[in-house]
Length: 260
Image (cartoon, rainbow, N blue to C red):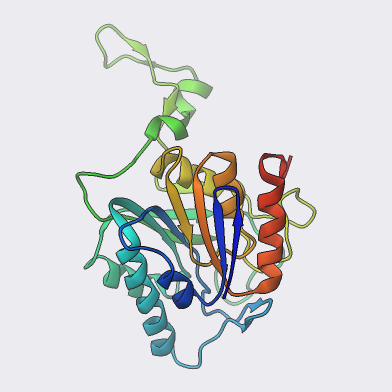
Protein backbone atom coordinates (compact mmCIF):
# COMPACT_ATOMS: atom_id res chain seq x y z
CA UNK A 1 0.00 0.00 0.00
CA UNK A 2 1.23 3.48 -0.89
CA UNK A 3 -0.06 6.57 0.95
CA UNK A 4 0.14 9.99 -0.70
CA UNK A 5 -0.78 13.32 0.91
CA UNK A 6 -1.57 16.42 -1.15
CA UNK A 7 -2.81 19.43 0.82
CA UNK A 8 -6.06 18.27 2.48
CA UNK A 9 -6.22 15.08 0.41
CA UNK A 10 -5.01 11.55 1.16
CA UNK A 11 -4.67 8.87 -1.50
CA UNK A 12 -4.30 5.17 -0.71
CA UNK A 13 -2.93 3.21 -3.65
CA UNK A 14 -4.37 -0.13 -2.54
CA UNK A 15 -7.17 -2.63 -2.72
CA UNK A 16 -10.44 -1.19 -1.42
CA UNK A 17 -10.62 -3.48 1.62
CA UNK A 18 -7.05 -2.71 2.67
CA UNK A 19 -7.55 1.01 2.16
CA UNK A 20 -10.74 1.10 4.24
CA UNK A 21 -8.87 -0.46 7.15
CA UNK A 22 -6.74 2.70 7.33
CA UNK A 23 -9.77 4.91 7.98
CA UNK A 24 -11.26 5.43 11.43
CA UNK A 25 -14.85 4.42 12.10
CA UNK A 26 -17.39 7.25 12.42
CA UNK A 27 -15.02 9.75 10.76
CA UNK A 28 -16.46 10.43 7.29
CA UNK A 29 -19.14 13.00 6.42
CA UNK A 30 -19.89 11.90 2.85
CA UNK A 31 -19.08 8.76 0.85
CA UNK A 32 -19.38 8.55 -2.92
CA UNK A 33 -19.37 4.97 -4.23
CA UNK A 34 -18.87 4.22 -7.92
CA UNK A 35 -17.54 0.63 -7.93
CA UNK A 36 -16.96 -1.69 -10.88
CA UNK A 37 -20.32 -2.64 -12.38
CA UNK A 38 -19.47 -6.26 -13.30
CA UNK A 39 -20.14 -5.50 -16.96
CA UNK A 40 -16.79 -6.51 -18.44
CA UNK A 41 -15.10 -3.12 -18.79
CA UNK A 42 -11.31 -2.99 -18.82
CA UNK A 43 -9.67 -0.98 -16.05
CA UNK A 44 -5.97 -0.16 -16.07
CA UNK A 45 -3.95 -2.28 -13.64
CA UNK A 46 -6.96 -4.26 -12.47
CA UNK A 47 -7.90 -6.40 -15.45
CA UNK A 48 -11.42 -6.95 -16.68
CA UNK A 49 -14.43 -5.99 -14.55
CA UNK A 50 -16.20 -9.35 -14.68
CA UNK A 51 -16.82 -11.92 -11.98
CA UNK A 52 -17.55 -15.53 -12.98
CA UNK A 53 -20.40 -15.78 -10.47
CA UNK A 54 -22.92 -13.04 -9.66
CA UNK A 55 -22.96 -14.17 -6.03
CA UNK A 56 -19.20 -13.69 -5.80
CA UNK A 57 -19.51 -10.11 -7.08
CA UNK A 58 -22.38 -9.29 -4.73
CA UNK A 59 -20.63 -10.72 -1.67
CA UNK A 60 -17.51 -8.69 -2.48
CA UNK A 61 -19.64 -5.55 -2.72
CA UNK A 62 -21.50 -6.30 0.51
CA UNK A 63 -18.16 -6.64 2.33
CA UNK A 64 -16.88 -3.16 1.48
CA UNK A 65 -20.35 -1.63 1.78
CA UNK A 66 -20.49 -2.78 5.41
CA UNK A 67 -17.06 -1.27 6.04
CA UNK A 68 -18.12 2.03 4.45
CA UNK A 69 -21.17 2.20 6.70
CA UNK A 70 -18.87 1.75 9.70
CA UNK A 71 -16.69 4.67 8.54
CA UNK A 72 -19.66 7.02 8.13
CA UNK A 73 -20.59 9.47 10.89
CA UNK A 74 -24.10 9.27 12.32
CA UNK A 75 -24.83 12.51 10.46
CA UNK A 76 -23.25 11.29 7.23
CA UNK A 77 -24.56 10.45 3.76
CA UNK A 78 -23.74 7.88 1.10
CA UNK A 79 -24.32 8.12 -2.65
CA UNK A 80 -24.04 4.71 -4.31
CA UNK A 81 -23.97 4.02 -8.05
CA UNK A 82 -24.42 0.64 -9.71
CA UNK A 83 -25.53 -0.89 -12.96
CA UNK A 84 -29.22 -1.20 -13.70
CA UNK A 85 -28.77 -4.98 -13.62
CA UNK A 86 -27.45 -5.11 -10.06
CA UNK A 87 -29.02 -2.12 -8.34
CA UNK A 88 -32.14 -4.10 -7.26
CA UNK A 89 -29.94 -6.42 -5.19
CA UNK A 90 -28.19 -3.47 -3.53
CA UNK A 91 -31.43 -1.60 -2.90
CA UNK A 92 -32.87 -4.57 -1.01
CA UNK A 93 -29.64 -5.07 0.93
CA UNK A 94 -29.00 -1.44 1.86
CA UNK A 95 -32.54 -0.51 2.88
CA UNK A 96 -32.02 -2.79 5.89
CA UNK A 97 -28.93 -0.87 6.99
CA UNK A 98 -29.52 2.77 5.98
CA UNK A 99 -32.39 5.13 5.22
CA UNK A 100 -32.83 5.51 1.46
CA UNK A 101 -33.82 9.14 0.97
CA UNK A 102 -33.88 9.23 -2.84
CA UNK A 103 -33.50 6.94 -5.81
CA UNK A 104 -31.83 9.16 -8.39
CA UNK A 105 -31.56 8.63 -12.13
CA UNK A 106 -28.55 10.17 -13.89
CA UNK A 107 -29.40 10.20 -17.59
CA UNK A 108 -27.36 11.29 -20.58
CA UNK A 109 -27.34 11.33 -24.36
CA UNK A 110 -26.27 8.51 -26.64
CA UNK A 111 -22.57 8.02 -27.32
CA UNK A 112 -23.17 6.54 -30.77
CA UNK A 113 -24.51 3.22 -31.99
CA UNK A 114 -27.23 1.85 -29.73
CA UNK A 115 -28.54 -1.69 -29.28
CA UNK A 116 -30.34 -3.21 -32.26
CA UNK A 117 -32.40 -5.88 -30.46
CA UNK A 118 -33.41 -4.13 -27.22
CA UNK A 119 -33.63 -0.64 -25.69
CA UNK A 120 -30.15 0.59 -24.87
CA UNK A 121 -29.43 2.01 -21.44
CA UNK A 122 -29.02 5.78 -21.23
CA UNK A 123 -29.04 6.17 -17.47
CA UNK A 124 -27.37 5.02 -14.28
CA UNK A 125 -29.14 4.72 -10.91
CA UNK A 126 -27.88 6.35 -7.71
CA UNK A 127 -29.03 5.68 -4.15
CA UNK A 128 -28.88 8.61 -1.73
CA UNK A 129 -28.78 7.22 1.83
CA UNK A 130 -28.26 8.46 5.38
CA UNK A 131 -27.67 6.87 8.77
CA UNK A 132 -30.13 9.10 10.62
CA UNK A 133 -33.21 10.68 9.06
CA UNK A 134 -33.22 13.42 11.67
CA UNK A 135 -29.59 14.52 11.33
CA UNK A 136 -27.87 14.84 7.98
CA UNK A 137 -26.55 17.60 5.72
CA UNK A 138 -28.71 18.80 2.84
CA UNK A 139 -27.73 22.25 1.58
CA UNK A 140 -30.65 22.64 -0.81
CA UNK A 141 -30.01 26.34 -1.45
CA UNK A 142 -26.59 25.48 -2.91
CA UNK A 143 -28.02 23.39 -5.76
CA UNK A 144 -31.14 25.28 -6.82
CA UNK A 145 -31.98 25.21 -10.54
CA UNK A 146 -34.24 27.27 -12.80
CA UNK A 147 -37.88 26.26 -13.12
CA UNK A 148 -39.45 25.93 -16.55
CA UNK A 149 -42.64 27.63 -15.39
CA UNK A 150 -41.23 30.48 -13.33
CA UNK A 151 -37.84 31.32 -14.79
CA UNK A 152 -38.36 30.46 -18.44
CA UNK A 153 -42.09 30.99 -19.06
CA UNK A 154 -42.78 33.76 -16.51
CA UNK A 155 -46.24 32.42 -15.72
CA UNK A 156 -48.50 33.71 -12.96
CA UNK A 157 -50.02 31.43 -10.32
CA UNK A 158 -53.63 32.62 -10.13
CA UNK A 159 -54.42 30.14 -7.37
CA UNK A 160 -52.71 32.50 -4.94
CA UNK A 161 -54.48 35.48 -3.44
CA UNK A 162 -53.24 37.83 -4.68
CA UNK A 163 -51.81 36.08 -7.80
CA UNK A 164 -48.04 36.06 -8.00
CA UNK A 165 -45.32 34.70 -10.32
CA UNK A 166 -44.23 31.11 -9.93
CA UNK A 167 -40.92 30.54 -8.17
CA UNK A 168 -37.95 30.97 -10.46
CA UNK A 169 -35.78 28.43 -8.62
CA UNK A 170 -36.36 24.95 -7.20
CA UNK A 171 -34.52 22.01 -5.68
CA UNK A 172 -33.75 19.43 -8.41
CA UNK A 173 -35.89 16.32 -8.48
CA UNK A 174 -34.46 12.83 -8.72
CA UNK A 175 -33.98 12.89 -12.52
CA UNK A 176 -30.63 14.49 -13.32
CA UNK A 177 -29.33 15.25 -16.78
CA UNK A 178 -25.57 15.74 -17.11
CA UNK A 179 -23.59 14.90 -20.28
CA UNK A 180 -21.05 12.13 -19.99
CA UNK A 181 -17.36 12.98 -20.17
CA UNK A 182 -16.24 13.00 -23.79
CA UNK A 183 -12.87 12.74 -25.47
CA UNK A 184 -11.05 16.10 -25.58
CA UNK A 185 -13.21 17.66 -22.89
CA UNK A 186 -10.97 19.57 -20.43
CA UNK A 187 -11.63 17.05 -17.63
CA UNK A 188 -11.29 13.95 -19.83
CA UNK A 189 -8.97 11.13 -18.74
CA UNK A 190 -8.62 7.70 -20.31
CA UNK A 191 -11.03 5.68 -18.18
CA UNK A 192 -14.02 3.50 -19.21
CA UNK A 193 -16.51 5.05 -16.78
CA UNK A 194 -15.30 8.50 -15.79
CA UNK A 195 -18.01 10.55 -14.07
CA UNK A 196 -18.47 14.26 -14.88
CA UNK A 197 -17.43 16.93 -12.42
CA UNK A 198 -20.88 18.55 -12.51
CA UNK A 199 -22.42 15.35 -11.14
CA UNK A 200 -20.01 15.31 -8.20
CA UNK A 201 -20.40 19.05 -7.64
CA UNK A 202 -24.11 18.65 -6.98
CA UNK A 203 -23.57 15.73 -4.60
CA UNK A 204 -20.72 17.33 -2.67
CA UNK A 205 -22.37 20.75 -2.41
CA UNK A 206 -25.66 19.43 -1.10
CA UNK A 207 -24.43 16.69 1.24
CA UNK A 208 -21.29 18.16 2.81
CA UNK A 209 -19.99 21.43 4.22
CA UNK A 210 -16.70 23.28 3.88
CA UNK A 211 -14.04 21.37 5.81
CA UNK A 212 -15.97 18.08 5.82
CA UNK A 213 -14.28 14.79 4.93
CA UNK A 214 -15.38 13.08 1.70
CA UNK A 215 -14.40 9.48 0.92
CA UNK A 216 -14.28 7.84 -2.52
CA UNK A 217 -13.17 4.18 -2.22
CA UNK A 218 -13.09 3.66 -6.00
CA UNK A 219 -11.46 6.90 -7.03
CA UNK A 220 -10.69 6.05 -10.66
CA UNK A 221 -9.46 9.28 -12.25
CA UNK A 222 -10.19 11.21 -9.03
CA UNK A 223 -13.05 13.40 -10.15
CA UNK A 224 -14.33 13.40 -6.56
CA UNK A 225 -10.98 14.59 -5.23
CA UNK A 226 -10.69 17.31 -7.85
CA UNK A 227 -14.14 18.67 -7.00
CA UNK A 228 -13.45 18.45 -3.26
CA UNK A 229 -10.42 20.69 -3.70
CA UNK A 230 -12.46 23.29 -5.56
CA UNK A 231 -15.17 23.23 -2.90
CA UNK A 232 -12.78 23.23 0.09
CA UNK A 233 -13.61 19.76 1.36
CA UNK A 234 -11.10 17.26 2.70
CA UNK A 235 -10.72 14.18 0.52
CA UNK A 236 -9.72 10.55 1.04
CA UNK A 237 -9.40 8.39 -2.05
CA UNK A 238 -8.68 4.69 -2.51
CA UNK A 239 -7.58 3.35 -5.89
CA UNK A 240 -5.87 0.07 -6.75
CA UNK A 241 -4.45 1.15 -10.14
CA UNK A 242 -1.13 2.96 -9.98
CA UNK A 243 -1.82 4.51 -13.39
CA UNK A 244 -5.06 6.07 -12.13
CA UNK A 245 -3.37 7.18 -8.92
CA UNK A 246 -0.82 9.06 -11.02
CA UNK A 247 -3.71 10.78 -12.81
CA UNK A 248 -5.21 11.61 -9.41
CA UNK A 249 -1.98 13.15 -8.18
CA UNK A 250 -1.85 15.30 -11.30
CA UNK A 251 -5.43 16.49 -10.89
CA UNK A 252 -5.08 17.24 -7.19
CA UNK A 253 -1.84 19.12 -7.73
CA UNK A 254 -3.52 21.27 -10.38
CA UNK A 255 -6.21 22.11 -7.84
CA UNK A 256 -8.64 24.87 -8.73
CA UNK A 257 -7.09 25.39 -12.16
CA UNK A 258 -7.95 21.87 -13.34
CA UNK A 259 -10.42 21.77 -16.20
CA UNK A 260 -10.51 25.55 -16.73
